Length: 235
Length: 276
Image (cartoon, rainbow over all chains, first blue to last red; front, side):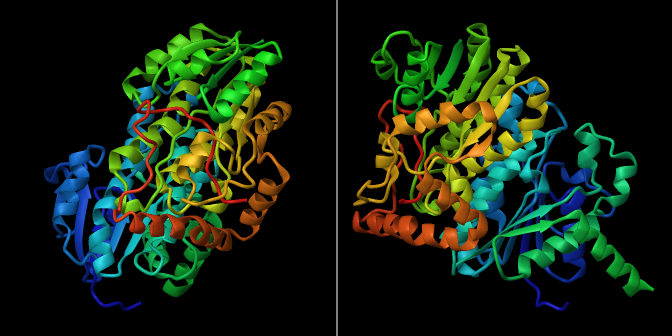
């Protein structure tokens, strides 16, 4: 697929799907502003040569700092930063509930608000990265709720901004990222059927560009089909 | 029989608290509006607290747990902020998320940790018909209610093991102060369900768990939203969003309806939704 170079913002870019996104975008010649919570010095060795802004999106100043750095005509904003814990609900404190909502819901809401003028100016697209957990996940109810809420935010924005800014909520299925280890979950042999971050990133980028409804779910089945196709293409 | 109802000073929460008390329950009635709580008929035990105050939630959860254990817990407190997303104030939208989503989740966690919900009891979450239809013009509200629906689906199995039913109510428009504040200007209010009727339907249904929409008309609208979600949201755009935008333009300002700085925060229950 050849597309003319565009300007992208990618949040949560220091690992997982976000890292895979900026690697692919940089390799395709797009202009990328990447943000993450880690300091620049702690970025992984395979982080591409693109501008990186260390910002804590869970703080009000973080979103403003990112918005101040994006180009006036931003083509694509991919709000991918997210966090979650595998914990039963009774193990959660109010502070933890607030922290997860802050990162997974309030930060994208603030960024969508701040980026709206830049996206509208370029007739751009906003992508919110959710999770198939939005359908309900007994092992991580807070995470599921935050992603369900993100879906509702995207649905409302897609309708409000119709004809001005395309809004898409992409829900990846389970992906082999460090989030599982951080969240206290060892997928074991299950990991074999998880998406790998590169594959998920390609699916996210394709979902942003397609037409149709606001929601795109990257199911395990869709992942397996994609993997088979790529294997055939490689053979 | 003990019950806890949040948002109990007005709207749906009030109707639920009154009905539960009439059925003989000892009701802990929570709201930010102490004066409203004071007008509840007797056996309710009022507790004035503001759910917007996230820092106080942990302590509030402990206070509520100490008044339990409960057979029925109903999270009916809810607020909204309506208007164009880009014209709405961020703090106001964060407050909507805090009251409608953060508080019920944090309080539920505290109650479960303290085993303050009895086996055989019900946890009732108040979502919105907007979960089925989308709600342009109330993006933060729609987000909070979709979040609650995901929360309810996630808890169903873990709580079933403890013998607790989880029910998510997705009400359509109710005849409450909340709905009147957030409906498009000039809306007739016809077709809004009386909160007392919704309360009876919820109490009759809650022992079964699952999600449901009280009333035939709203339930049919919800089913339509499941079958044709895109079309349902387009209809919401035309019937709710465009009138809101036009009214804001007429008023010569881009600002829109926020829950007024009346008693500044959480708790008038009742759901906005599509015009029936």
